[in-house]
Image 1 (cartoon, rainbow over the protein chains, first blue to last red):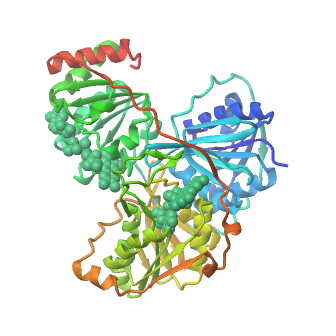
Image 2: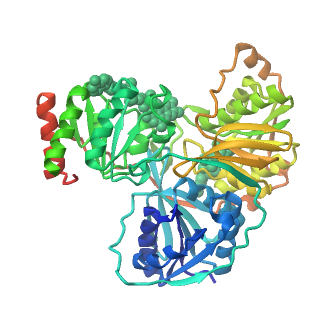
Image 3: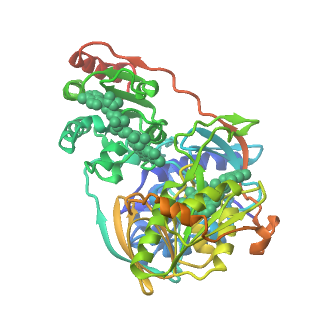
Length: 326
Length: 255
Ligand SMILES: Cc1cc2nc3c(=O)[nH]c(=O)nc-3n(C[C@H](O)[C@H](O)[C@H](O)COP(=O)(O)OP(=O)(O)OC[C@H]3O[C@@H](n4cnc5c(N)ncnc54)[C@H](O)[C@@H]3O)c2cc1C
Ligand SMILES: Cc1cc2nc3c(=O)[nH]c(=O)nc-3n(C[C@H](O)[C@H](O)[C@H](O)COP(=O)(O)OP(=O)(O)OC[C@H]3O[C@@H](n4cnc5c(N)ncnc54)[C@H](O)[C@@H]3O)c2cc1C
C-alpha cells in the first residue's frame, strides 16, 4: 500500500539545493497530517556524505543512489533509477523542485509510473485526507487547487523559493539506505558542459534580485545593477527587451518566457511592467520599481516606487544601502 | 528526414483571464500558436530545407485549434493532423497519450515540440510522449544539428548548458534562442489551404475516453489576490533613493 512522502533531494556539485529543504519542510507538514514519514532520494556520484544532513531538515530516511554514470544529469539514467526506487517503495506522494532538472525528471518518472503530475506548485496542503496542490496557471493570472485522487504516487514539482524552510534540528539523523543503481539504457551522451560561473546566487533561489529593463540603455550600464547587487548579495535579472537586444544572456530573463522568481525583494529598474514580465516576478514578496515614467504599469505592482532617472537613483541607492549595512 | 512537430494552440500572452461559472472563461480570448512551438516548427522546416523530407504537424484540440495547424502549414509544413479528444476530462497524461498514438501511426526520424506551453504550461507533455514511444528526449534545446541517425543538441541545464548527442528518433523540445520563426508568406497562406489537414477523433487513433481519463482533478479555480497599490516615494532622485533605502530597512525590514 502506498505510504510516505518521498522528496527528490536535488544537489549540484556536491551541494544540496535549497529547494530540497523547502520540499522536506513541506513534506514533513503533510506527512504528519497523514500520519506518515518523509524520505528523500539522493542521486549522483560521490554524494553519500550529503545524506546525513538531510535528517536535520526532516528526512526520516534517505535513499542514496550512487554511480559513476550519475555524475552528470541525464534524463534516462536519472529517470530509470528514480522510477525504480519509487516503484519499490510506493510512496503516497513524490515531490520534486521545479528546477530545470526537477521538471525534466518529473515528467519522465510520472509517465513511467503512469500517474498525474502537477507542476510549479506554490503550496501543498492536506484537505479531507487528500493532498491538494496550489498551482498558478496562465502565467499567474489564475490559480487552481488540484489533486490526484486515484493514481499513485501523487506527483508534483514545487516552485523554488516559495515555501518556508523549518529550522533544522541539529543532530537529528536520518536512516541512510544505499540502493543499487540500475542505470539501464542511456540514449544521450553528454559531450560538453558549459557552466556559467558567477559568484552571485542563482536567480530562482536568490533572496534579492536586482533587475534591469530597456531603460538601462545598454549592456555597459548593467554595472549599476551589479554594484547594487553586490551590496545586497543579490542576483541580477533582466527583462526580455534586454535579452532580445543582446545585452544580457537569456538565462537571466525574468518572465513568462524566462525564469519565474519569488525573491523577498525584487528591484525593477527601467522596466515598464509588461504583463509577460509580471508573470515571472509578481509572487515576489516586496517589489520596488524605479522608472522615470510615473504612469509605468510596474508601479501598479510595486510596494515602493521611485519616479526618476535610474542613472541618478541607482548609484545613490547603492551608496545609501552600503551605509546602512556598514 | 521525416519530422513531426507537436503544436499546441494557447491563450495569447496578453489575454485577460476571468472566471465564468467557476472556470476559466474563454470569452474574448485570442488564441495563438504556442510561441515555443513556433520555434519547433521553424526548426523542422530548416532541417527539411537542409536534408529534404517532410514535416507533419500534430495537434490535440478542439476545432478552434485548426488555426494553429494552418499557421504551421502556411509556414511551410506539409500536412497536419488535428485530433479532437471530444472529452472535457483532460490532463497532460491524456494529451500525451493521444499525441503518442497519433504519432505512432506516422513515419518519423525526429519529433520536435516546445519545452512548455505558455498558458497552462506544465512542461511535461513532450517528455511523456517520448516515454510512451520509448524514445529519448532532450529538453530546452537552443541549438540543434540532426543528420543520419543522430542529433547533437545544446540544451539548458541547471546553471549553464550542455551539448548532448542523442540517437534518432528522439523527441527534442525547443527553448527560446533556437531560431527566429518565419512569418507565413502570402503565398504560404494560400498554399496552406490546399495542404492535407486530417481531422480525426479518439476512435481514429484506437483510443476511447476511459483510456485517457484525467488523473489530475481541478478542485477550484480562483484569481490571484490583487497586489495592494504601493507607495511612491517623493522627492528628487537622490533624496528619494535615500528614503527608499531607509524604507526597505525600517518598514519592509528586508535589507
Ligand atoms: C509571448 C511573449 C512572451 C514574453 N515574455 C517575456 C518575458 O519572459 N519577460 C519579459 O520581460 N518580457 C516578455 N515579453 C515582452 C514584454 O511584452 C515587453 O515587451 C518587455 O517586458 C518590455 O521590456 P522593458 O520593460 O525592459 O522595456 P520597455 O517596455 O521599453 O520599458 C522600458 C521602461 O524603462 C523606463 N525608462 C527608460 N529610461 C529610463 C531611465 N533613464 N530611468 C528610469 N526609467 C527609464 C521607461 O519609462 C519604460 O517604462 C514577452 C512578450 C511576448 C509577446
Ligand atoms: C485537471 C485538468 C483539466 C483540464 N481540462 C482541460 C480541458 O477541459 N480542455 C483543455 O483544452 N485543456 C484542459 N486542461 C489543460 C490540458 O491538460 C493541457 O493544456 C494539456 O495537457 C497540455 O499541457 P501543457 O499546456 O502543460 O503542455 P506542456 O507540457 O507545457 O507542453 C509542452 C509541449 O508539448 C506539446 N503539446 C502540449 N499540448 C499539446 C497539444 N494539445 N497538442 C499538440 N502538442 C501539444 C507542445 O509541443 C508543447 O510545447 C486541463 C488540465 C488539467 C490539469
